[in-house]
Length: 134
Length: 134
DNA sequence: ATCAAGACTGACAACCATTGTCAAAACCTC
DNA sequence: GAGGTTTTGACAATGGTTGTCAGTCTTGAT
Image 1: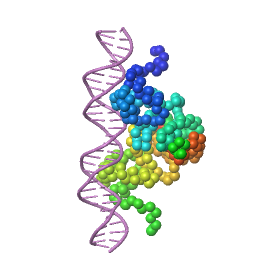
Image 2: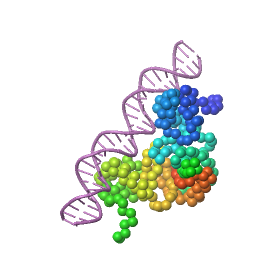
Image 3: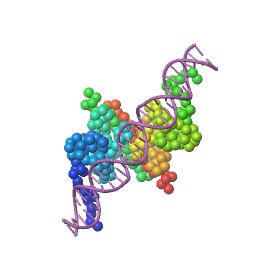
Image 4: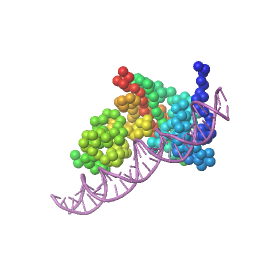
């Protein structure tokens, strides 16, 4: 078997459209919002397709997913590939990516202490950004 | 005992029932599960009431809420009142409460660095507990 | 006890994000 | 192009959660 870099999915107009929106959008966006945006923009894409595309991207680690307070899943294309966290503005959604080796180690050690294996964790920080606080 | 600091809600059979289940349950439980459990136990309580009761408890900070991977809200009565986190078994749900002053400070400082005010954060650790790993 | 006021309840409908379905369309390889 | 596979999209179905509203229960006062 030849080395398969990562061409597992086909390039289609719909996926390109979703990708484009993700590139232009700095903040987390929900599948519904993305769908509405595409429709408004003329390049309509089926809702189911939007969901499938986002899910695929998330599975491949190409976008980050987290849950809004309402429990809705929101997506965002992130700059760094490695594991990281987010500092999100509660008011406008402005997001800063955070790398926290300290926390990673801490989480690991806490889990070890209690004998938990296969550890993963979620960590998001919320606050009011400088612009919204003004 | 005459001093009633915060009797904002009435005591009813239904709320007592929900409370009881929460006391007996060490792991996070969903509203649906709680409702089924009550029904099976004979002390039926309306589903809407279960939801309302849990929401009220959560608002009052009497139970912790977090979202399962499926996006379902799950509830748990916690031992400590102060802010803390959880180490949850991915398989059986066994939960350990964790206090992490280090993380609290870290989160605060990260937020400060970026000028974010009014900071809060969510942090949960998932893993496989010793018993499930066996 | 009794009562009135209003908080609480529950069966059911309504919501809404998300997923399943499946025939038609798009795509790639030969 | 032809054939086989992947993708799409309109629509139905699912499932957790919230809204509704008339009837019931608590509570504090009488």
